[in-house]
Length: 465
Image 1 (cartoon, rainbow, N blue to C red):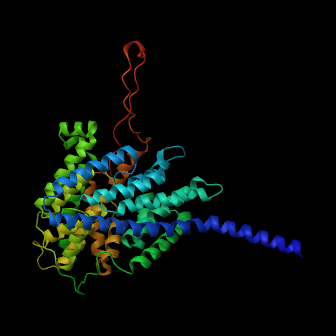
Image 2: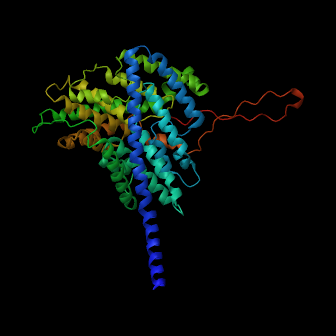
Image 3: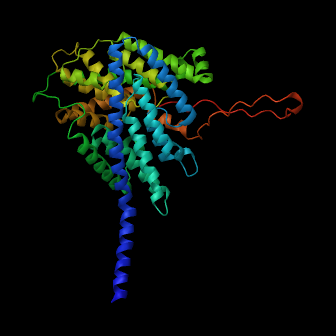
């Protein structure tokens, strides 16, 4: 009897261990991603609120603060957190496509996770035009990736599923857009549908989303826009024109980021290569100047400006989307951590506001929604992810066909200017990450000096994203 009981207990224990390895680690990781995503969002919101409060009290303060925080952020990133620069999505794509022994694992370490959060917080505290959604994707992927240590025998398939699930859950928790998280994993991260990983990804998204909802409540990112039951006659024309305008603007932005050597003057390129901290300070000064010219509307992610336009409380200058684009380019040239999703949506809202002067008979909120999805699709060249994100953000199911059409056209127009941004930037991470340069060798008296040349280190981080 005791022997039978012992055998039964042994089978239960083995079954419990198998369930834990198969599901428990993913559930634990999804809970962690949800908690960290909420904490990170609140940290970024607090940092930007502190910057705006200081800027309102001292209008010229950004001319000092923004360059200083830019220099500090670049120094920290290049010295301690190589691989944390940019949005983080190119790093996740590179990790998913890396072969064993390549640099993929270096992009998802706990050190980079902490650096991503800390340095992007410094960036938003300095008023940079960056978002938190892209970094949340890399943070989520890094959290899940490091849970492989809980497996007795980890494999390449398990690591890939962990990274994919963490990244998708991170986007879902950041925007409260579960459908977009699923589509993002398929369209942007893997460029294919993997039946074996689909259940894992969906489960992680659901759990992370439930955690975020439990802490933040049930909400839509930009609220709900009201669309009448009858669409205006000029809607089709507005869709095409909005898609073309935002497609050109988004394609130009991608071209600027991917072809810096072709448009940045030679002295500035040399400064970027030899004195990156000084170059970052110069970019910070330019961002501060643009912010002062715009009345402070170009600082930060742009969420408040886009929300204000949708609510009808904000009145922005026709130059806003162009100034915001310039500030956004300046924020990414130095290579500090920060995302492009939220700023892109804000720029798109600015273009919608601008196009309302052409289509005065259409609802402003409708044009803003179309322009947001158009510009986001043009920048990411992921049209399905873009229209699903915007649809979930504004609860805009009535505009599904219009959003889809705008997204597809804008993405195609953008492709005429530049290849897909994230995928192109991810290719730059396939090589091993450069290491910080060694400390200068002290002077040695001439008789003791070795005849062999002194080693020199490499300088320059992987291009930002």
